[in-house]
Image (cartoon, rainbow, N blue to C red; front, side, top):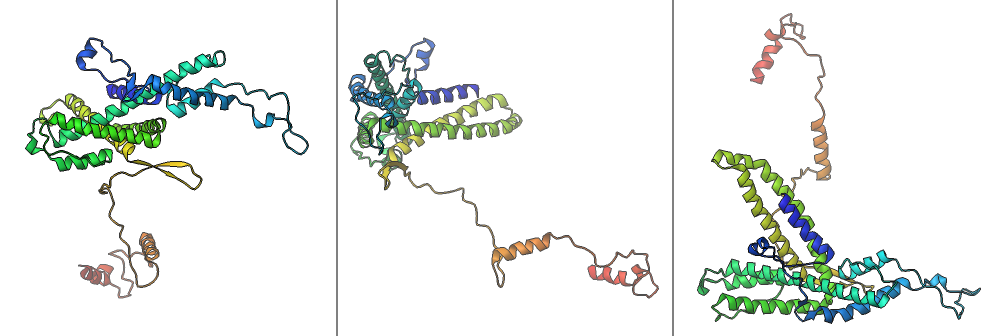
Length: 375
């Protein structure tokens, strides 16, 4: 659980801070090798993004330091009065500027020195933001490649012959994951060539999404969906691990070590959770659509493929009566049944004189009649 917690929180912190570095293999990890931070992603590079980012940062800085409207001099009628002296600008709040950058680009940066050297600080911040965007885009690309590889392994296994591939099921899975209709050439019999052809289609879909939303907005929704899935799936995973821990002791009856079984099954459950996070993020990101309301503001809407609802509860039974509302009649009947039964007369003992006045004991008179009718 401690290893799983470290892994999931490391992923969450990287998404929060806009950082990403591809994982290393087991051999490279043992030799302390590290993977360099990506400096380019597709047609995007740090240099190509820095210019666009720098102009946006300059506009942010101007908006945060411009004089407030109430600082302008006004006449008796409330109209602004021309003045040769420009109003004093608002002092820059570094924390507010850093928060504005984070909301726009998802990069948590150090904005120190922005007031002393505006041009130099903007150049530095622009390159850092561009580097963060490259890393975030590479995370999306690696996720798409991982999901595509899972689809191929499921329907076109590496040990299967090309004649045994289920291309129709593969196309359906790609439609669910990426939202596009794959055009597969039936003449392709090499799995590597098939993967390259499908990856080219996925790259076109990613570029189309970027053109539709713009790269900063596309990456914003990627971060949002990632954090949403991590938080939800991790809570469900904790509940699953707790249920596994409570029942794992029964494995001892099968001559198995419960501790080792818990570690093995816990690893499998964790892998399934990580896979579900990636699949759900991919489906949301590639099925998302923007709709504009009457005011012109954009709202994101995710339409996922229909999934049959297997958790629906059976309808509650209702009590129908000859007249009136069924619910009220049922409630009244339940209320009547809930009332305690009370005796109208005191209880008569078996050896007490019978209340009828015959002079016989109750068990020899009316008591014997009630006993026989009860049986």
